[in-house]
Length: 407
Image (cartoon, rainbow, N blue to C red):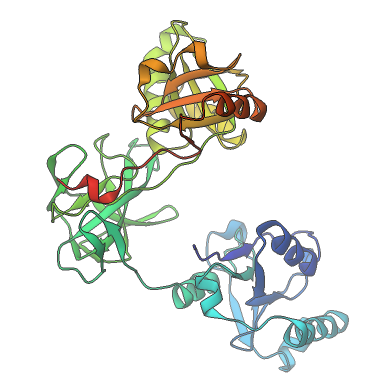
């Protein structure tokens, strides 16, 4: 399970009651909440937060646009300056709410946080740069340490001597002036050193890891070394992909990051032929980042490349970034499919033709060449499985066993 830390933002603006927000988090995420801090008022009456674990009040003063960390004054709920800062009614209300949380609420349990059963909740105002430091401090305090990772060499402990890690995110244009492309690497074992040479199993090449940075927001710092659990950003070209392993020990190959079946599909078209290169470069870059997925259909039609996403908002992001970052406006056309399944790679691809597919379904391949079938709806999928029970389907790509990946 993945630990979840929750930050409730914009407390300096009119908002719903904190208890309502906690109830919604519990219902939507099906998880127990524990507010680490508690807001002292909301909207224009927002005065700060109370740290329940340290028993401290953090009063804040607004700054213009959050350019700097908001000034904070720390004290106890019973201090005179705290009582004078809060209106009498608000002071009494906060005391009552905190007493309710202490008496009726769940006890804080770090083990339940690590297992994904409980989420620490923080309130604050990101625009005013208030409450973020508390979130980061507690995240560092309660986050689990680096663990073992399954690989072709077995479960690798973080204290293994040789460096290894994997690419979990790629982001382009973080600095629009330079159009850079950064691959974020999670260090799994050993020690990372700037300019070290590592193996890149997917390409079979040796790569020098230069231009290493740590990033926080718009801030960057050069990284000379890093250890298991650290995140390193490598300015790169297109040689890296999400899930790629980087290692000093050629026996280590990580399985990568799973991706899931999209439920929405569109055709994205270039309305301006003179923009073809920018359109193609932008779309290729966003596909490499994993913002959306692309599938090549087994058809002779010009519309033989369809984009898929779990949510339709991802398409809005793609079109916005295409136009604003690559100068390539686009037009989209909705597709009729709503269900995608990966096909067992052992099934002969030549047998997956229109004669066995339901009406409206289409076959194709993902970016890695894995066969897929797109269905118009769940009924069409059920019909296909009923008539073709020997064809195994999955809502995630079929993965080879790690032991079979050994080289």
